[in-house]
Length: 244
Image 1 (cartoon, rainbow, N blue to C red):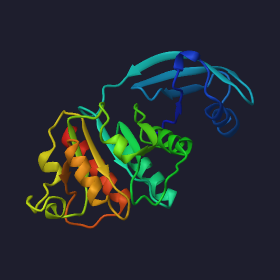
Image 2 (image 1 turned 180 degrees about the vertical axis):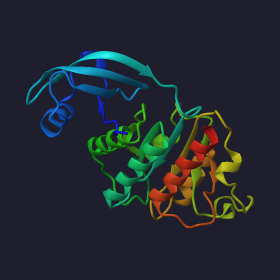
Image 3 (image 1 turned 90 degrees about the vertical axis):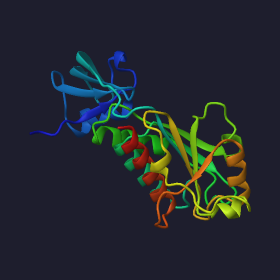
């Protein structure tokens, strides 16, 4: 069976592929007038189309069918993560999280952050490529660098919000419990959820305390010591399994 190749067009009713997608279809794949296209809008819709005009810079089409998709998971899945010094690692996370299924990805600027600037345009391209490759109809929203203290008090955060860190709870609250619950044990299926993952040096104690005061619950992602991008991906996977 021939592999279906998808082209991303956020506004399919415009009847023309965006620039890079058009060049890939016409210049790389040598598609021309009358050839069929499979389109995805990133908002839950697949389309079939036929090319009506092809040139070096344009690829126009006629829509022949629409196949709306229901979300593959309930609620919404969000992760806020401090980007790593090596951007290849955070790009890997965005790619794999998109393949698994995620709604929102936020880049956090924390006290111990190794990187304080990111190019969201590059992360968008990674997410689009992963969405097409994995035949997903939904593209995650990617938010650029956001200050930790400003983020935790935002009014649009879900009720289920968690912070993953490596401290014992007695480090956070001297009279608190020593054990943090495992994320999968406290997630409520079908409800929007958000997990924050810190940089390689972890969140600071003050950041964890501030997050808990803002309604976040401290959790663990298991007994293994995980790197930032691995921890973020584990969080996405646990939320995805719980909500599928």
